[in-house]
Length: 80
Image 1: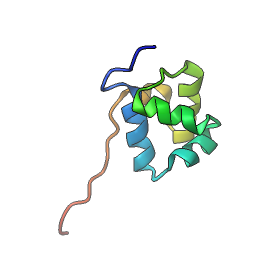
Image 2 (image 1 turned 45 degrees about the vertical axis):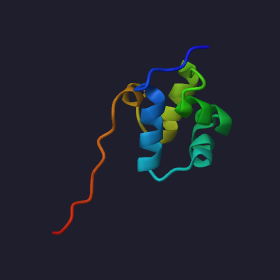
Image 3 (image 1 turned 30 degrees about the vertical axis):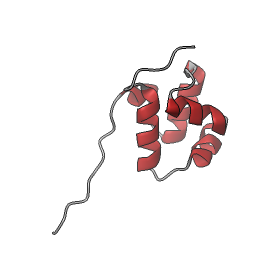
Image 4 (image 1 turned 135 degrees about the horizontal axis):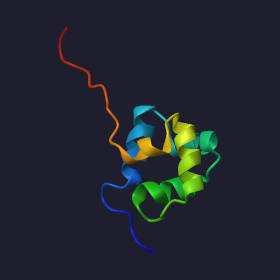
């Protein structure tokens, strides 16, 4: 099995999950995908199936295509 490229969907899955404040287990519950599978996808140890990506995207409230794009994260600014 091949490893996903450094900028593959797993990184954007993790970024989106963390931006929502979700743990791996919480995303697994929302997506109906095994916790270990998501963990391996995020770490690049497993190539995701399209059905898994669809379920993960649904759990994150985004489209599958969004998993391939860097999410825009609002950053807190110092001061008013």
